[in-house]
Amino acid sequence: MKITNYTTANEEDTIELGRLLAAGWTRPCVVLLIGNLGAGKTTLAKGIAEGLGSAKADDVSSPTFPLIHEYGEEGDLYHIDLYRLDTVAEVETLGLDEVFSRRAVVLLEWAERFPTLLPAERIEIRIEAREDETRELTVTELP
Ligand SMILES: Nc1ncnc2c1ncn2[C@@H]1O[C@H](COP(=O)(O)OP(=O)(O)O)[C@@H](O)[C@H]1O
Ligand SMILES: [Mg+2]
Image 1: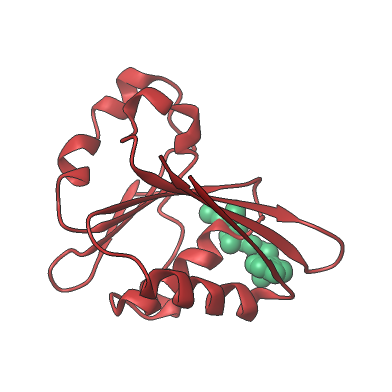
Image 2: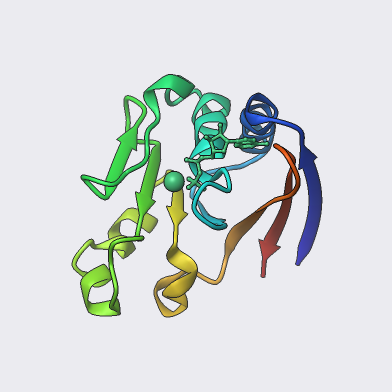
């Protein structure tokens, strides 16, 4: 397990961190984005999409409906938000295993609530809001 901490000062800083993190990842790669509403999960996803070359930051939005957004010409980035789902059975209808089996980066928001459905090998990024616009980010590479 490898743990790295970062602090960002504002929204653009978090997008830039997403670009840098994504540049070091190899597909397939499952990434949990963990934090309260407004923490900056979707903001980080914008930078990750740019770092992978899959989409421009402005084209990345919260995947509220549909719950799965796919980016990149060859579907090399998925962004999934499980906020509105309550049970394992509901999540199972999404077919996550099939998504995990693709050569893609899979970003998941609110997936820590369904640990039995997640691969053991994954990256967890916790985002916490501090005073003003500061965010503390903890990146954990599992196992
Ligand atoms: N350092 C920061 N990093 C990320 N977002 C920030 C930061 N400071 C302020 N913000 C603001 O916080 C909000 C984060 O929203 P969003 O990324 O949609 O959160 P989430 O997906 O976690 O609910 C945005 O309005 C953004 O402008
Ligand atoms: Mg979000």
